[in-house]
Structure formats: C-alpha cells, structure tokens
Length: 469
Image (cartoon, rainbow, N blue to C red; front, top):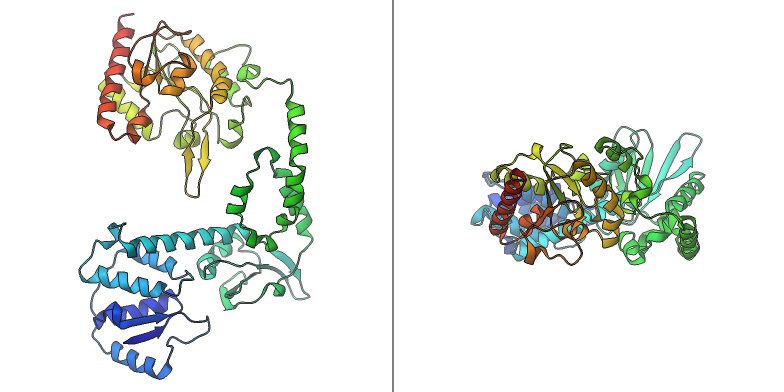
C-alpha cells in the first residue's frame, strides 16, 4: 500500500505518473490532503522508501485526454479530501482499458468529476466578483489589500486574473487557506490568515457605495436570486452589503416615484415614430425606442432588413443572442435553417424582407449564456407600431408569420399555428397572410425533418401566391 500526502495538482501529477509506470492500481494507493506548508509525504521514512522504489521503475508512455487534465487541474482545487483519489482512479481507468471514459457522462466517477469542476468554477467566479480591495498607505508604498473566504482552494487558480486586471497595483489577497501578493512583477504565495489582518475601509468606499446605490433598480428586486448569486457569507467583506437593507426598505417608495414620473406617458412605440417615414428613417428612430423595458437589457435594436419593394415579408418572433450582438435579423442558428428553407423553396434571402414582431432580445441570463425568453403579449403590443409601419411602406403581396408570436400579433390572438398552419387568411396588412413554424422550432423538435418539410412547403406556397398575384 502506498500512502502520500499531496496538496497540489503538480504533486499529484508527479506521484500519479510514477504510480502508473509501476502499474499500481487505485486500491493500492491512498492520497491524503495536507496544509499548504506540509511536505510531500505523510510519513517521511515510509514515503521516501515508497518514492525511491517508484522512481526506479522505467518510464512508460501514457496518452491522456487534454480535457481530463484540464478538469483535473480545476478539481485539484476542490476542498473534498478524496479529490486526488478520484483523479487517480479516473486516470487509471483511462490509461488501462477505458480510453473513451470521459465521453461516458453517466459514469459515476465522470459525473462526480464534472460536478466538482463546476463547483470550483463557480467559486472562482465568486472570488473574481466579490474581492474588494482597500487602500493601505504606508511610508514606503501604497498597497491594496482584500480578504476573501472561498469555498475551495482557488487562490492560485484565480490570482493570475487579478494580476492581469490590476497590473499596475501592489495588491494582496488574504484568505484562510493561503494568501497571494502581487508587486507588479510576479505573484508570490504565503500562509493564510484571519479576517482581522485586513484593513476595514478606505476613502474610496463611500464613492463605491454612492455608485452602487445609484445603479440599484428597485423595480427589479429578486431577493432569492440576489442571495443565491451573492451568498450572505460574503457580505462581511462587501461594502455594498451594508446598505442593502436600506435599499430594499426604500424600494417601494422609489418604485412609486418611477410610476408617477411615467404616468401619462405612452408605453408604446408610437411616440417614437418619425414624422416622415421610410425604412431608413424607421430604422434610425427605432434605435431610440423606449416603448417597453426590453431595451434596457438588450444590446441594441434589431430592425428588419430587405428590399423596400419586397413581394414577400417574413415576420419572426424576436432577435436571438447572435442577432442581438450583430444587429441583424436571422443570422444565428435559426437564420441558417431559414436560409436553407428559402433556397429549397426557390427563393433567395435578398428577395424577401425579414423582420420580427419584437425588436429587442428578451432573455434569461445564466452563468454561461443568455437563454431566449418568450416576449409577453404586452411587449409584442408595445412593439406592434414598428411592424405596422414596415408593412405599410412595403405593401407585400404575401405576409408570412414565423411562429405563434408573430401570428398572434398580426393575424389575431385566437390563431393556432398547429391547426391553421399553411392556410392563407386576410390580415390588416395583406390579403394573403399565412403562418408556419418558426425555424427555431425545427432546431428544438424531435421531429425536425418533418417540420422542416412543412416550412419549405409553406414557403413554396407563399412564392407561388406572390408570383401569381
């Protein structure tokens, strides 16, 4: 039985390489945690004997997926004392008879590895977000000091981020496990310390509190979400935490003031429509629209595009993530599906006018990406004047609604895409209006090929109607 005390990824990797060379199975190895300043081996005499025997074994070549090494490096920072045991067990399986093990996400060890990596990644994000430096002036220099209590041993993982972000500052981050110093040249590590070793505040703190209070939106309070994203255990080191209770208590008054200021003002795009309307003037005016709250979160307005005399207009639901960033409709995955369907229907994208019922991207933010969120009926109604103005100028021969949101907005709330898809009906803006599936529905559906065929058939019908009108 081999017993090692290992604290870092580098130490574990060195031990594991020697153990693999000697073909020592996981059940014959015990890895245990250690303080930062401990030696490599738990029992010095037994450790030296084991190590000397291992290093004499001729080296072997082992192929290990880079994805595993990246995960292992992160998981080595996890606080679970069994982490190195798990990593060696996975390494043994990968290098013996399970080379594709990392693809089996249902495997217990692989699943646990990913869960631990996720916990470390989240804790690293919290450290980046919640570290608050205080200025400490001495006769020799100006130093910025912060104290943070991470859930895992992420100091060495995250400190390069701070050296890149604050390269021209002398700073120190203190944690219970270990601390890190940056002197504008290199990172140095030392023992951890308690909260009372960090300064309490500086002259910059009042300025930060004033700024935080000014950006606090009382109309969007979600206390559970706030606590989940900013756990209470970190509040002791966050200056803004001292005023959160006051801001929450004052929120009803501030919301009432906001409503009073808005009373009598239209919650629609009509106030923003230009007097002289062309597609170009509408596009410019839409950039300033504040007809609903979606403009506050989206990157930009995504207006329609295409020829002013297009015979066919296609109206979707709203821009997606890539459309929001690019400022153009249907350029993301759903747009690629639509382009292919248009081509197979005998049409070219440049021949049709593409727009959306809602001009701003509505989404739910997550840690990794922004998730599409369906616009409400009120938001669709608020944006309706822009679509009306586009259709009034273009006067299409055929109007195609892509998905339920566009169909409900332009045909009527009782229209059912499932039951009435592909049927020409009369709408306010076009004699020949039909609704079909949105391209994004094809991407999500288990019956994607069937829906794709229906979309192509409906586009063919739209083209035939336009050619014969």
